[in-house]
Amino acid sequence: MDEALLRSLTPSVLGILVRRGADFAAAEDAVQEALVEALRVWPAGRPRDAKGWLVTVAWHKFLDVTRADASRRRREDRVDEEPPPGPAPTVDDTLQLYFLCAHPSLTPSSAVALTLRAVGGLTTRQISRAYLVPEATMAQRISRAKRTASGVRLDRPGDVATVLRVLYLVFNEGYSGDVDLAAEAIRLTRQLAAAIDHPEVAGLLALMLLHHARRAARTAPDGSLVPLAEQDRGRWDTVSIAEGVGILQAALARDRLGEFQAQAAIAALHADAPTTEETDWVQIVEWYDELARLTDSPVVRLNRAVAVGEADGPRAGLAALAALDASLPRHTAVAAYLHERDGDPATAARLYAEAARKAPDLSERDHLTRQAARLNARRRH
Amino acid sequence: MAKYLLLKHYRGAPAAVNDVPMDRWTPEEISAHMQYMNDFAAGLEKTGEFVDGQALAPEGAWVRYDGEGRPPVTDGPFAETKDLIAGWMIIDVDSYERAVELAGELSAAPGAGGKPIHEWLEVRPFLTAPPTITE
Image 1 (cartoon, helix red, strand yellow):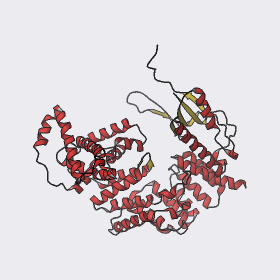
Image 2 (cartoon, rainbow over the protein chains, first blue to last red):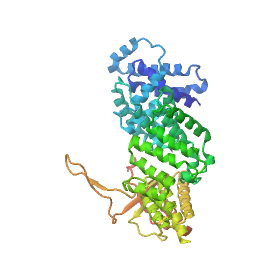
Image 3 (cartoon, each protein chain N blue to C red):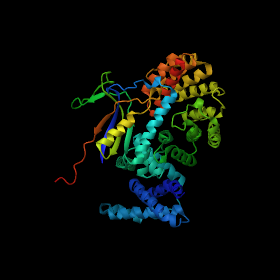
Image 4 (cartoon, chains in turn cyan, green):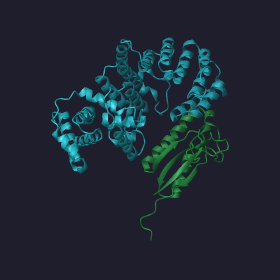
């Protein structure tokens, strides 16, 4: 419980230190130390003003380090002379921090790591475990990212799109190790949505909630992947779905469509349907058309071909697929699916086996192999 | 304790006894196989012998340095003749005999017809760091 509270306070505490004139990298270290101190001391009695406590402790940690470093003597004097600031507008501090950690001068993997640590309040160890790299490697990645970020001057407003891309990356990493990255991405996006009024932030939050709602139904007890059509929809989290749909509707009403709102709209149409057959595929195709207009991504056109196959029949889906580059990831898997729907199990089985060889992850490979096996077994009988 | 690499091949290993491609198994046989592999890794974690396990995609390329100021040369995807690694498991065990015993157990994973695959696995000892006491 304390950890959740601590982590929610992390960005504003860091923001206050930076605002007081602390260098970003040093401030971030000081905040991490204060978090560790809090986890040690708070069990004996949590301070009434948790945030004030953290600011004070982090500030002293920062001063200790600054004082100990003789070469920084001059900066220390300057910092000490500065008057204590009034109550900082923490919403802005938090927002600035998001922009800084997702700054375009950082590589995507650096931006992800820095966001999880500086905004999310995760430890380097937790982040390294989540991404399955050695802790020393992650420590270096974060420290290099902090050096880059320290040199950034945020004199212009940041671009929300870069922040959203980072949060989307975190969400897509899903669950590995002891940190639930999908849940963490939702928490950070929710926090961002509270700090800035932007329909695409709302769109991304809705998209995450709608996908997260299906999580329990997406894997079988043996760990294998369960495709959307076969999921037990009774296991979908209706509370998350309702929240996602509500957020999406409010965002769409503002008539500033973006790719995340369009993706969320597709997820909402799936969430709304009692079965695959009763899904409003015609509307889903229309949303894919919108998405293709917004992003021109080949992946979107591939997904559109699947939707066309459901809306207008497998032949139409195959025709849409024929217009796309066959080397696209998952192209073969989609072709296999559409050929099966078209009543050609032999071609479908061959394509499923080929798609399995090209699959980018193990659960997808297993799933595609099973599809090939299912069709081959049926043909033998 | 000594570390061993158990290597599984897509190509290049001698043919297994029960050598049927997985897409010709029944879905139930695939499930049984997956369960066996998961249980095997979980068992090694419980005995304190598991280090790492990873799978590799069959696609890849050869790459080499091509001189100052020039981009590296690539050659690939791999030709059909290449010995092709599918994945590995690293174990940390008391003896070579134990490594062989575990590799045998892994090779007994069920395949087509629910019968063991008898797949050939390559067992390779790690070169170790020098011991502290040498004389």
